[in-house]
Image (tube, rainbow, N blue to C red):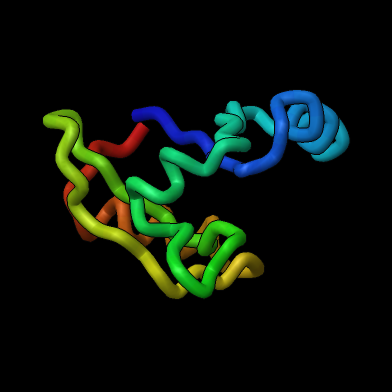
Length: 90
């Protein structure tokens, strides 16, 4: 299993942010917002990306999109959702 974040910020900004929080996962940079637009997280009336979580199976298909992310509880929510979707435990 792999996980990462995506951001519309520059690689330099994301690197500083990741280092400041000592993150153990990569942040993909999409300053052009082309990928964000393709995933629907940037759209008319929403210039900044939505904070959504996409669960993608090993087959490359999106299994679920969580559009109601609660940043404070998200770690627990992700663990529960992975289990519910049948992703293997580490």
